Image (cartoon, rainbow, N blue to C red; front, side, top):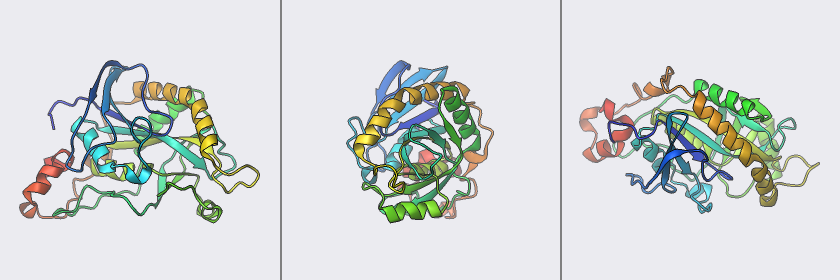
Length: 289
């Protein structure tokens, strides 16, 4: 990894957000990682004096299922570029009457219901455990919250995001179970990104755009792709405004613990870590090796 960051803020765009507007000095970069190829090229550009790396989560044209996403490659690539703060944007279903389609949620907790994806950089000769009690950086989430409100969004600050495997939507029994657990929204991607961002010592926050009521609310028709796409089209302009304002508000000088998340997390004796693992993890934890 270059000692000079090419970007400090990373943005991963989900359903309905495949590019960022208003960037200057734009270039596209295709990266290779030890974990395989990322979802697509990274688009680097400048806004409000901040160098940004943007990645369309599902690839341009929305080609990749949530289960097919190479989450490790996506985050590793961001780290290669020097990104220290990561913002995820995506669509979610609501599990609460008061969180209506068209609203925005900045979640601060997650429940993991995935079962078929790689969610750690470690293994292969390196054992590490990282704290994830608070998976979202409160400082970054606060900046995103203010920006979304400034963009005119009806915003819900905090909340629990159920991360399901997909690609199918929930059964009605599952949807009601998640409501009984006290969850607020449901999606298919963000927790995996939050886990890997913490291991990579990045600040992480999520901007979740509500498209539907999942299937628990019998007063409305069940979630459908047609409904989701219609709401996404309505939300896209607001999402871009919120992102532009968030970029201007994010402080590049991090004063949180995210930047040292792995300081005491590596259990393996450095003397026995294989050379291949050292090389694979150099952008992630090179300073500890």
